[in-house]
Length: 226
Image (cartoon, rainbow, N blue to C red; front, side):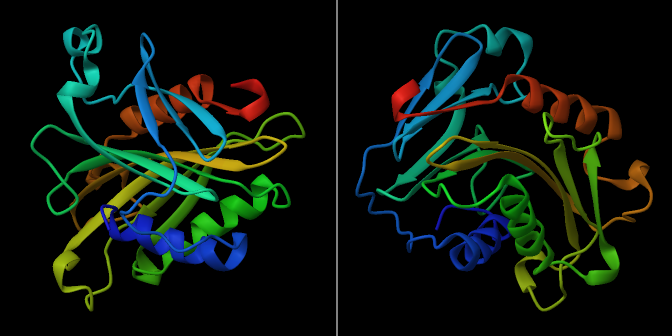
C-alpha cells in the first residue's frame, strides 16, 4: 500500500471508528487530481478537496503550469473513501523525507473531534509512548477547529525498517453533510527529542507556517457543491 506506516496505522484505526472499507490499489471509483492555479484539487468519493501546493517546491516550480509533473503522487478511491499522497520528485513510500496527503471518507455520522481522535490513536501506535506529543494550533471554538500536530520522537524498535527514526505530522480536518476529510503533511528523520523543537526533522517556524496555510487554504465540498 503506497502510504507511510503512520498513515496505514491511522487508516486501521479509522476502520474501527469510521467503518472504513478495506483498501487496495485496485480502485473501484475514479480519483482525479488536478492543478487549479496555486492549488491542487482531488475529486473522489463524492467530494472535492482543494489544498495548497506542496511546500517543498521552489517559487518558480509553484508557478509552473504543470506542478503535478514535478512531484510523485498516487491515488486510491472507492465508493466509501479515497486518498491522494504526494512525494518530492525521486522519493517514494520506501524512501521519503516528507509526504503530503489527503483522505476523504463518506461518513455523515462522525464529528471532527472523533476523526481527530482516531488520527491521534493511529499515529500513536507505531511510536514509543514516552516519545510522543500532541498539540493544537489554537483554541477550539464552535467556529474554529484547529490544526493538529503529532510529534513522534522515535518509532518502536520492533519496526525494523523505521528503528532509529521519528517524525512530525500536521493535519487539518474538514467536514460536509456527507463526509469528513483530513489533509496532512509528515516530515521524517533521525530519532529526536520531542520536547526540543530544535531537534525535530522540521523547524518550528516551517511547521507553524504550514499549519496556518493548510488551515487557511484547505476546502472540502460534497457532490452538491462540486
